[in-house]
Amino acid sequence: MARKAGVLISPSILSADFTCLGEEIKAVQDSGADWLHVDVMDGAFVPNITIGPLVVSAARRVADIPLDVHLMINNADIFLEDFQQAGANILAVHPEACPHLHRTLTRIRELGMKAGAALNPSTPLCCVENVLGELDVLMLMTVNPGFGGQSFIRTMLPKVRAARKMIDSSGFDILLEIDGGVSPKTAPYLLNEGADVFVAGSAVFGAPPYGDAIRALRGH
Ligand code: DX5
Ligand code: ZN
Image 1: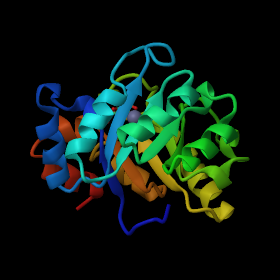
Image 2 (image 1 turned 180 degrees about the vertical axis):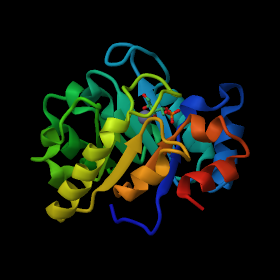
Image 3 (image 1 turned 60 degrees about the vertical axis):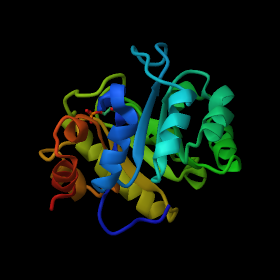
C-alpha cells in the first residue's frame, strides 16, 4: 500500500464506549481518523474475548473509512471470508497462529482485502521475510496483545527501525503499522523510526476531544 505524506491514525474501538459505538465511530471519523482499528480476540490466542464479524458489520454500516481488522485468534483461516463479508478492508493475522502464512495472506488478497501480518513483541521479523511480496501491512505489536491501555515496550524501537529497513530494501509497498501504547509521548520516537500507521485506543478514545488527540499523535 502506497505511503502517504504523514502518519495514518487508526483509532482502536476497543477503548470506545460500546453503549454508543456508532456515535463513537462517527466522532473519530469526523475528527480526522484515517482508518478504524477493530480488535478481534478469541480467549485462546490472547487472554481476552472481544468481538466478532457481527460488530465489524455494524461498524461497516456507520464507517466511511477503511476497517483495519486485527485478528488475535487461532484458526484465523476459517474466518477470513466471514470478515470479508462483514466489510473488513485490511485483515491482519498473527503468524504465531497461522502455520501456513503464505496461504493465508494470499487468500486474504484473493478475497479483495489488504493483507496484514501482526507480530507479537517476541516474534522476530524474519518470520515474514519470505512473504513480503504477499503483504500490504506489517503490524508490529509494541505491547503483548490482549488489552488496551498497556504500557509501550520501549525496547521494540530497534525492531521498528529494522522493519522499516527491511520494507524499504524489499521494494514492496508495505505499510508499517504500530499497535500498542502509542501516545503523544511515544509517537515521536515511532515517527522517527519510520512508522506509517498508528493504532491508538486509549490515546484517542480515552483522551477527548478526539480531534486534539489525533492531532497530538500526528505531532501537529
Ligand atoms: C492490543 C490491541 C490494541 C489495543 C491498543 O491487544 O491489539 O489494538 O486496542 O490499545 P492502546 O492504544 O490503548 O494501547
Ligand atoms: Zn490491535
